[in-house]
Length: 358
Ligand SMILES: NC(=O)c1ccc[n+]([C@@H]2O[C@H](COP(=O)([O-])OP(=O)(O)OC[C@H]3O[C@@H](n4cnc5c(N)ncnc54)[C@H](OP(=O)(O)O)[C@@H]3O)[C@@H](O)[C@H]2O)c1
Image 1 (tube, rainbow, N blue to C red):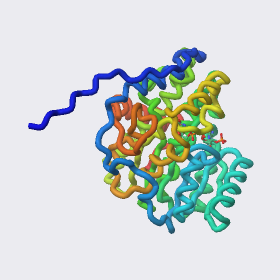
Image 2: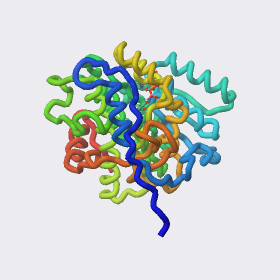
Image 3: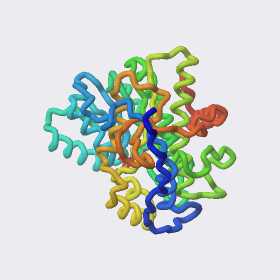
Image 4: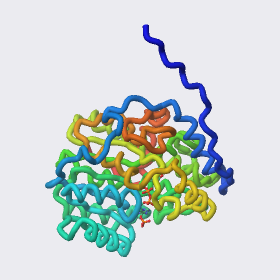
């Protein structure tokens, strides 16, 4: 028998980041290090080979239409650019008309005027705005090959509320995207399309469940705890949607959950506190953080890769799942807790005043 390599028992290299307390519970940089250390031994064989999934696997997307939220920066912008570069039509759902116009102009400058891209205004922080945008999509977009729920806010320092009175991270990241999916479902179904939800490894931080007795976190608001819960909620509803589709005998629509690892985007800069932004700016300069373009690969893979198993959770598979070859990541069992997921679905339907119609 050939000798087996000795297991690597070395401790992960220490990463010197300042432990800075950010309002409420949780040290933001420390939680990153926790993830980094915790996931160290989780990498497994990548189904797409050593390099993992890359957009080289996409051939032509001519004739395909992708609807994507939050393309004014970060992974959403990069995903839109790659889809357009492959010949797809892209419908962007953004809240800020000026930024959207700039985005279209930048994309045309980089890819040429022939690209098929336009924006429909939508603010995920307002259910009325989501409804209005969905209506416009249904009236003007005849086919949806994938709805990519990419937009989010993170690390909001003080408890703030959406137009409808939801804590802002839960309202924007989960309820807004949940309603959008439900409203666009009939068109996605008619197109045999996909629903792709961009989550976060943050799902594995915080309380690791849903705080049903205080969804707005009035008693214990914490920027990181609430962000983690919102991303967990998004991920849980993907697997719950799969179960509901299956129970209804619907096999045409596929739903996927993924995460972008740690990517150099505007995320914390847009919504985080001054201190969190400062720390994240420093972290972005370290090799722990990858480019926004690479951060877009998991959602692109989920939107385009044929025969991708819906049960998986996809993202960069390197240490801590921060970066590295894109493939399947281990999903912790609390993200598939059926009792919590069923309750969350019902709570989400009630909150958004929308019943999914399968
Ligand atoms: N970057 C990371 O390391 C990281 C890690 C884990 C998960 N993620 C996830 O990756 C996804 C993309 O984020 P990113 O990192 O690319 O951040 P980003 O650069 O800040 O992009 C976020 C996008 O969402 C949009 N958005 C925010 N609030 C919105 C609202 N109320 N209505 C409509 N659009 C809204 C933003 O629009 P504006 O320009 O108008 O603000 C922007 O286009 C998010 O789901 C995030 O949770 C990122």
